[in-house]
Amino acid sequence: MGKMNVTNSFHVLFLCTGNICRSPMAEGVLRQMMIEESVPGVVVASAGIAAASGFPASAHAVTACRERGIDISGHRSRPLTREILAETDLVLTMEMHHLYAAKSFSPGCADRMYLLSHYAEGTEDAAPFGVEDPIGGDLDEYRAALTTIGAYLEKALPRIAEVIRTSARES
Image 1 (cartoon, helix red, strand yellow):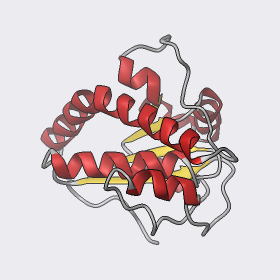
Image 2: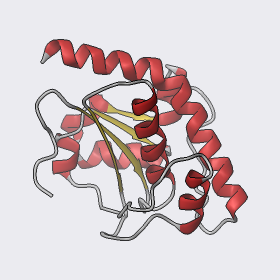
Image 3: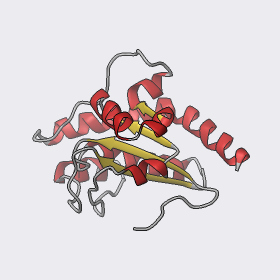
């Protein structure tokens, strides 16, 4: 895949377990938001702390996203690597254990890593502590997870936009 980081671009990474449900849905939602808000130069990606390479997003994740006009059908899973973390400006995880795994995996990047729900609330101790994994559930569970992810990203959008603007000024 080569080096992701391109001059004048800001890289956001969503992280979950298998990179076939929550993080691809979050990736699709934020990518759509960046288009709707006309925010240029943002690269949105996802990975999993226990992901295998090359698997498509789960059928229910694809369907739930499609219902909202978001196409994640081309998604392919990938495992988290130190290289991915080194090239990422903001890491948003679905659950605390993903955050702990990423921080222990690459401590030098820990200052760029957050639990999505905490990032959205602007605090490190807000409940709830993440987005529940819909894997193995029915379509309604995927819709619920997508609704939760969307709500967190709506709340986090001003903060994400400010971080992107600050990063662009510094480059």
